[in-house]
Length: 193
Image (tube, rainbow, N blue to C red; front, side, top):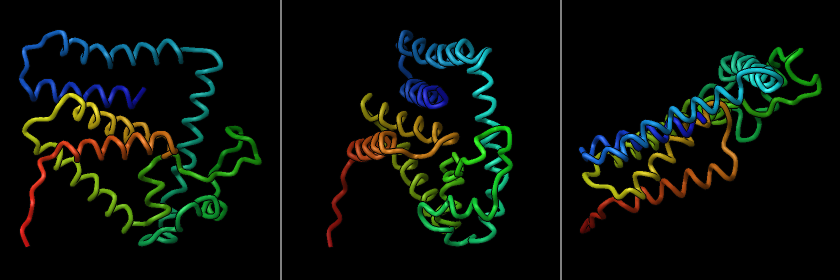
């Protein structure tokens, strides 16, 4: 739902940027985040689901508390791709009562923390430069079709969802496919040698 809210906000930004007087579109874009919040409230307002979500958040916080120590061990280039579980063996999070005692922590459940742990400061800076240059490229466009605006909203939605999760195949495909479609919308400049 965090991704839906973030994506809706991006679409709302494009609607206002375009200065359309299309009131139904603006109303729909305002209502989408409210519907998401209402759904979240009704789904999680009590019972087992709420306890499970609280436990999940507490587990993530316990994992995140160990990330600075792991980064301090290998700050510049990280521990390497898919070596996070080995790093958490050296710095185990306090998950007693939250997770099964045999649980293996193999991700920090936050894309930016995972990048720092696996790729270090160098990898994180490169990824942030990539995101920043992509965002600047998109925001410089004077006109974007609704398809391309939707693709940019999908990119923001996936990044927002990754704040409490990690990239899996389905959302990674959505992220890079949307990114390629957004870049396809850009005017192509030929450079003469």
